[in-house]
Image (cartoon, rainbow, N blue to C red):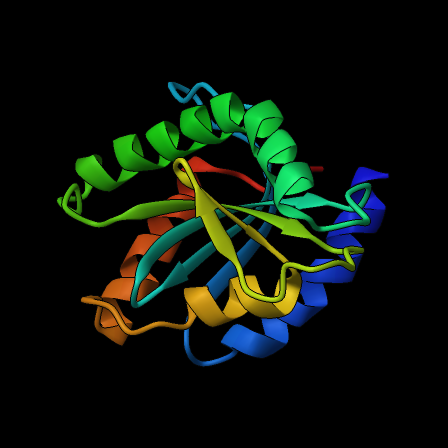
Length: 157
């Protein structure tokens, strides 16, 4: 199921951020970092996005979104903390790390993404819209941060 969720969202993220950011798929925490695997790490001018996919959440209502965030927020917090550790090691400790839960199969009343606690939740189109907002990073900084994230969060095998 995990691979199916990633195959649905991964190509879309690649298309959406071609030339505007760097997308890293299926990442594991390297030595010294404590968190579960990350579905997608996206580095954009707005910061670093730790994206978890949820293919099971098919009715995107406020109640369902809140329940999904409550279940995933502790691990999302650990993943964001691991990313902050990496950013601090290269002098980007000021950069914002965002957590997002993307409901890849969702229908329902929530048309726009919503931030619940520290996690953005929504459909792929809404999450991408939030991720594309302008931010403080120049393109060279995006590439620098992405290279370090790729090194510290190696690809799953």
